[in-house]
Length: 528
Image (cartoon, rainbow, N blue to C red):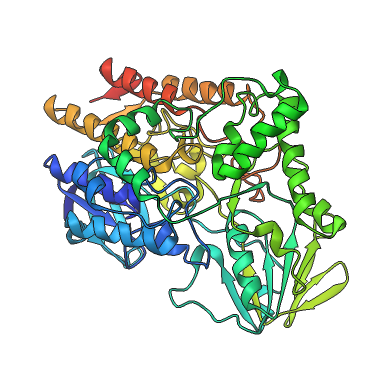
């Protein structure tokens, strides 16, 4: 049986950096990856139009100044192929693949209290032993396929945006149906509409989307950032979501309607996620939030020619309580003659037939059906593995009422197990690359502390865990996020999943708390 100091599950950006960091500190590390290449979400989500919604100069590693200087992005918002190229460049530059076991799904992780080690078994039947486990399984990596009656009966092509084939399908002249209007669908729909003879979009809940205004990288801007990258990164780390979004310091309600709309128009023209930072109170004041929502509604009515379709595309939820989307010509696409929007909010899809989709008594016939039905977010990939801690307690049992952990990093009853950007951390509501590096660095410091003090185990105490969950919820309850709509932030998209708002809101305060815990000899942890 092979033994390692650290086993890392997942070879996305989190797993790659964990391998590089810990290996450089003298730990023996093995990474297990189910795909045949690195990149994580950017390996799997290959659908046309897949693109990052964070500026390229920010959605990148900062641990190596040489890497930052040598890599050049071609666009303001990088596409999936370019991000995957970047991931492979990093893997090659730091010789990571020699310690990554590809095409390997981890089936189980069981902790042995007799020797304080984890036993890892793969789907192929291989056994490994490791002192520490780092779960770099990703927040949006377990795709969700609703239990549609008759799905297996469909005789055409079925695709899910989260497991898109490496060879792009040909949609020219085809009748295509797409179920879902979340972020992936919003990126995909305009391109499919250009190729397909007809495109029918099934929408349950409309999403807010802001134009990206993507463009080739401004080389002078890139040069300026690279000339002082360290300070640029440091300034971003002090912002709420670790993004350079130019947050406003005033309330939306302090201005007249005309003044307010001028601000929104400027943000709309700038494009992207910065729209959410138009005013300081969009996330915690419903009246302020309504002004932003109405502005977007007015834009949709301007763009979409059919008033009935525009009304269906106008979300009736709190702006930001679901993931804010970033698009290129999404709303314009519904002016095309070959595009049809079907509202399934009141009359859900009845079944999938051999020829297509039956909804509200009407059968829509397709050659291809695309499921843009999202993910079992933040916990799904973790709970897909049989993880058992002390006394055989499974993580599934531990989290049956919702995820519980300390700092979003460790779980009481599961010694030497760490999660990266999981529930209880800023995770999906911060710049993921920044959050990943912060988590890996904290874990690495913790393991070095154990090693230098001849300690074998680290485990969150039950009281620290309970206090942390109380804090995460208390912060969230000061905002509109938990109750503004049904979202995957709360698990509401998965039938039977406990409803709990999972992310920690506020990157700088989170980092401050993590650093305080470490500075006080890992307060809240049981070390042994």
